Length: 378
Ligand SMILES: *Cc1c(COP(=O)(O)O)cnc(C)c1O
Image (cartoon, rainbow, N blue to C red; front, side, top):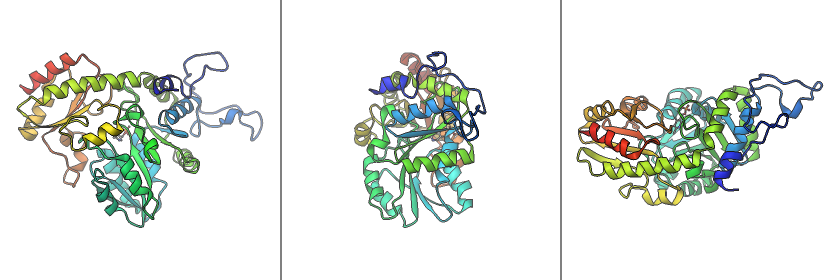
């Protein structure tokens, strides 16, 4: 079946007990057993598995062309669980402008446990190849990145990773694109990670994360870690994401249409020094983006001519674009990454331009959004 159909039905069936069409929110921590060692349908304890979470996990597996999915309390809980595959002394290569929270986890926390990290420019597969060592176990790719919207060629990176003697696994953080725009597992990635807090949830009312993959053995290892560590998603939150995903395709199409109109407006503004959108002809990887993504998505970044002061001024002057962290909801948001989401990268090689403004373009009328940006830029 096609993506739009799977978004509504995958992993979900009418409840066998009463026919409820929507997956019930199973608010239960434990399950009656028919005898010792005889749990019903495999459910024993909700950290291990819960029917609402299972419906979402199975839905995501199908949407990402995977074989299995695992859901977590947040994107960071999912990311941390993937890293627990590693042991002291192992090495990870990650993109040099990964999400600020991912950088913080890798650089500030996991280094203390004896893991080693190299941050490289993954938009150039040659450069990535040079960063790999005999101890590299994971290559962590984000595309498009947050907040610079840099695009890496997933197929080209997968080629480099597959042929390296240390046989690392390739993980793609697919939060910005969602499986509607790009499916990394079809392009050679081993695992996909999501912050479901963003476009998958889509309504800024839930925090969640996911890991999806194909390989059975890797799936079993990660399910073991999910249960052992316990950063699982609760049933109510799983329900909210399941509900959000049903409209993912139409939301992503409209996010992208609105973003295109705003890009056309911003490129004419004199106080905008640089405009960044994956499908704009000025984007350095526009060809790769058009090859691997269905549309350009709803995120736009731009650098203000007047630097930090001007960026803060604009972000504090919009009325419809809400000044807030996060992204991917129905409502439009604006932020200044250097002073907000990416503060943790300050003073590091990953530091972002202080004049950078990031927009998460929502589903309001595009003319209203443009009028708001026009008055703020003035
Ligand atoms: C938000 C985000 C995360 C972290 O997810 P949480 O749900 O906030 O823990 C990871 N990667 C990207 C690209 C993100 O935007």
